[in-house]
Image: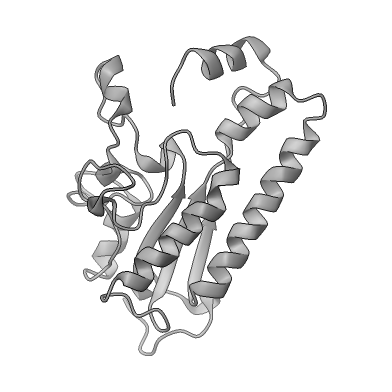
Length: 202
């Protein structure tokens, strides 16, 4: 299911054309507590099972984006296959951090760029890269609830995203960016915001 020749535009991409997969974000991207059965296990980063970067097992065992793409390109590179911290070698191209906010995205992008440049199996110029970004929950819950002008949080989020996208465009050619919208579950619910920010650890 790969194209006969390497596509020159993201609009020509087929699933099998994706050679490298990566992810930036917070605990949702890091797979935090996916297999947790108790409160202590909520801090374990089950990155190998993360919906957008986990490649543990097959799609029949764990329905993740990498496991689906592996069907079309068995040589897919960059996914995670084990529990790990973002600083561990096993985290591969998953640079997400627990509790990260959008202000952390540029740092994550630089970290990802360094990792890809150091990986000899990545052809920076010719390999197509799928990079998922999911972040903002921690921003919106903490800032939208407490700032006198919530729009400022949105502006800051936008600026951080733009800076990150410019970095990725400059240093990672042939990249398809998958920006996933946040879930505004706690917006305008100050009591729940307080509980999430002061009692529950993400």
